[in-house]
Amino acid sequence: MRSKPFVELLAVACVLVLWLAPARAQGDAASDAAIEHRTLDLEVGEQVTIEAPPGVQYSEGVAGVIDLKLPRKDARDFVVLALAPGTTTLLLILEDGREVHYRITVRPHEPPDVVKARDNVRLDFYFVELSEGGTMQLGLAWPGTTAGTGTLGASVGLSAEVDLRTSRITSATALVAGEVLPRVDLAESEGWASVLRHASFVVTNGASGTFSSGGEINVRVTNGTAASLSQIQHGTTATVQPRYDRREGRIELVVSAEVATLGGPGADGLPGRKVTTVETVVNLELGQAVVLAGLQGEDRSQVRSGWPWLSQIPVLGYLFGTRQTQHEKVENVLVIVPSVEEAVDAAGRGRVDAALRAFREFRGGFGAAPLADVVGAGGAAAAAGGAR
Image 1 (cartoon, one colour):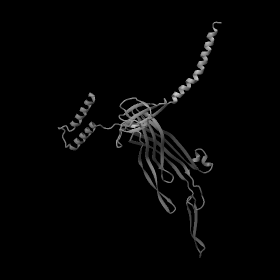
Image 2 (spheres, one colour; image 1 turned 120 degrees about the vertical axis):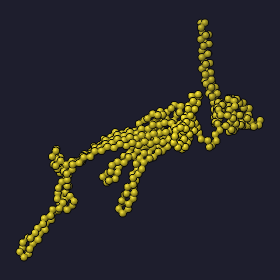
Image 3 (cartoon, helix red, strand yellow; image 1 turned 90 degrees about the vertical axis):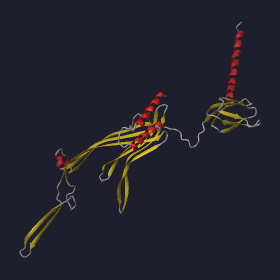
């Protein structure tokens, strides 16, 4: 019986907790809703105004970054003046309890003609291609037709002279032109080729650069009574946009490259073109070589012509037809090596100028040690660097 009041008291406490929890949650939500966050991005010397309702109270975070003023007592706006580079905060407390939090960033003043220092990235492209191939033709090439007076046929002619008094043939001539004879095919050719392309150029970090080197061959194209020139281009074209992170020491490259080389003449005597194209994005360290693309290919072909059925007989078929076999093997690789080009400092330029001056003034004889100034400047610079 004595525990009954305790149980009742515990039940009342639970009811109060459940009743107060939603009210507290609503109070927290209302408190969060009463806080507003804003940002300001200014440059040294720049001024802006922000709202200052009546009765507002304010507090500045880091002193010396901005200057906050009211032009007059009844003014409804603050004047914010950016004084020095940095970041600070500003708290405004309104009469109704709401709060406005400002985060203010002040940047250094930069004249419009100032050029910021940026890294220069050098890119070296290496394209290597190796190829070999050959052709073999063996057999007897028979003409496709044997009648008529065409280039592949035969023509027969007969002429005679008759003496009408004696009715005798005095002379006779038989002519066989373009007789049907096979052509002997017994030829073999082998060859190889190696191609090396090395392209390098420098581009500012974050910018896009394009390099193109090569040439073109003009080919005359005849169409009826009109003639025109057509170009077959060959060479190397590369477009790269580097993004270099000095802190991490890594670089990301957006690469689009094409390497075109001239091939052998085709059936019409015009040269062909072999093209290697790559478009990719790579991420690597400085000085690290990466293979952007590579190819290994091998082609084989065989053409057979001759008499039907007879040219297909093993071994003996070469007497009734000809066979032409071609083969080609190609391997190529495209490699890129990025590096950062460091600018020459004033001391380095002085040494270069001294060396060039010694070259221009040299007239023979080393007694005066013409390059002593260059060596001395280098030694002094090295000593100064070691002292630092």
